[in-house]
Image (cartoon, rainbow, N blue to C red; front, side, top):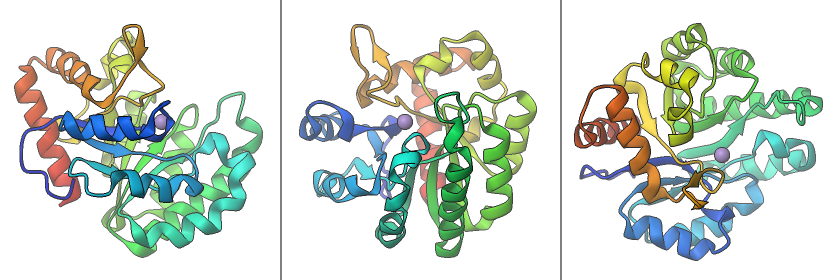
Length: 251
Ligand code: MN
């Protein structure tokens, strides 16, 4: 992804290691020439993801510790820290304030603070961040612990308000948008107001669907199509815009 040279599609948040056949998932993303950020949910998964992405031109692994898993995997935080120097890409990280995870929210905040501080100290990292039912807290953390010139945040599946989006934009955040978000009226409305130079696309596969099956990176074309229609552009022009945004983000 550091050598984005064409107008290929971008799936900036996909769990390639959670499909039934991991090797095929990596291989297919590469064959489809979709620039794919392979996010991980625990640092223990890192090595395997690095192996699977080795030699691939279109796929990069990201080092994560998913907020929904923090309650059971916080002990892997030292491992996460020791691996950070190996990658530019971090995620999935963030906060989840939903009813199932609310009880671990204090621990999630402790972990997220640590992640942001380490990224700020290292500099130049790109993070894909989960903020479900915790948008204000996520933005507070970014504001406090990751200065704009020390790293870049991509808000994945952002569901906040317009004023929260405004604040995120002022903090320098990007937004990765998927087809499920674009099928929801409230989210469409919000997405229609985002600055075009801050928009990326994602599938969040395998947690979203494309018809009867799990979505794969190549299905990000449907997000590009819906986004293009929403913004009154051709799909090709939107694909070029997203690709240029990725280029700006990684350079
Ligand atoms: Mn995800």
